[in-house]
Image (cartoon, rainbow, N blue to C red; front, side, top):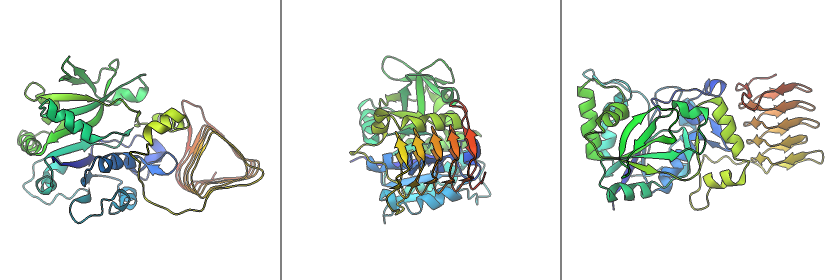
Length: 368
């Protein structure tokens, strides 16, 4: 059986979620009431029988390391393979690599030692539930050199302006990669490639002074390589701004969107934290809201997402908001279109109101 090893390359992902990425990289941002964004990527890999996963991280990765630990939550704490968090460690004085090719070059041992025939490279900003074994099956069927994964956008949201788009011919072969805002073929920052070919391309890119493996090793060689496009047709969210984070989080309150990401057949795993069940006091009124464990609710909550351990005081009103772990909202406070990062405290009677297209964001551990 052909095996796949995974690389989660965070090197080129910019921390564009403003206050939410002051203290962490985007991959570690909480999402969906109990998860981090990277949980979806790692879960997709383990559900696809990928047993060896490397994470390329360059900055603000302390929170990420604390969350992933040894990979136990994803069954990656194993003797052979497992989870490898690989922060920068440039010890080779002869190294001439640049950009994310530094990661590929300095961690080339991961590729050599990986018990795998193919390498899957992905980021963390594309939230989906995908089986990479299906990608491998199609990759082999068409005898591709590289298979890139894309999604046809139903609506061109602003976050897609930063994403690469694909030009595809009638045989699903990629003929162009660009940033045309009008294109609906959104590249999901995921590709599958044979291990030996990847190692060869890495060496070629470094020898020619390149700095970005995908752009310089694959995009610039479309005429030489057979680059196949695999269409992912499931639920997809691209999160690369506060606005896209807020909108796609709110979509989880819709049954179809929620069920598209969370499947019994392919569950999303995360670090386990034991909490008591949430407590709803007689004065509470909760409507259309995701509520994690350990919450204590006395006020009115509507169309919102509450993470673990949130406290909502009596008479408080929370609408269209995302309240992260251990936040406390005191009695008679009013929050609408607000994102509270972890451990925030909103004082009694305080009113915070944002706009649906521009939510009000409160940084981690701030009291107001």
